[in-house]
Length: 327
Image 1 (spheres, rainbow, N blue to C red):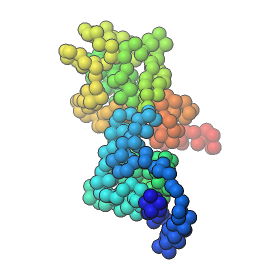
Image 2: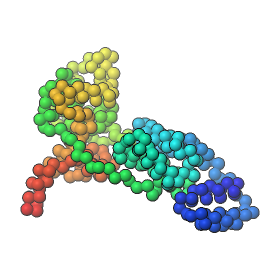
Image 3: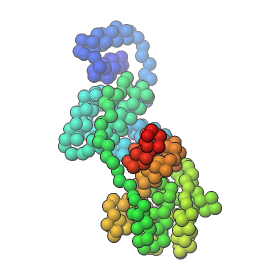
Image 4: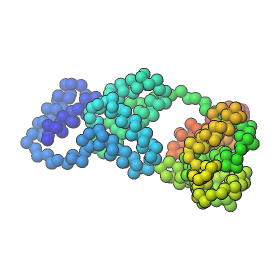
């Protein structure tokens, strides 16, 4: 039993010590554990990569991660272990670096994709460390991948009005207004029920990532268009948005994306997708002086850095502010 434990400890330290140091550590451990009775308290430790992965995903589920995020974690880590065939407690920093480098070269993916993979792998090994399944995470010394800061487009006021005027049914008009007015995620939008909407106070309750609940607010125009859409409905589905044809099922994310893309193609407006409405709202709110902390709460972001990435502050407004405060 002691031999197995010593071997695992030495294996986990290979990335941090040279051969001479490892031999000293090994001899010291054998001397310290000689003739010692070791109670088997590690039977619950995962005995394979598959067991470790199952336990990790269960922990993420308890933490409130969405099923979509958990599936992404699972796919990413399974891919890693299909290339790094070592047991999890023997994986080194160099193994992970080499895997990420080869993956990028082979699949020609972006730096952002590689950094997302690094983040998930790091989360997995950090969890193993926190559970005392490994001594130290081999991903700790693999730093964030530097990615180019791209200026992401937002909708102009003219584009928003053109889309509103060219909606062929009340549902799509209500969707555009609600996305633009509240900045909610498309996943939050399709989960809304009619009962979640408080028309009197022009607000509604949405369930964000990790089922976190928050209030969002909409304007008078959105209220009118939502009510007009609901009045045209011929079904009893509790969902706020349903398909246009019988049996009028709850609208899915793909249904929203297809409807908006068709409107964009008809008007020759590029990249019309739900997330762009969210980014547009964040930019507009900051440009008009809303405190960044309030924008963060409005969008349901756990970290303010995420809010700053969404909001692309207009250069002309920066120039005006510079003249006002520093000129």
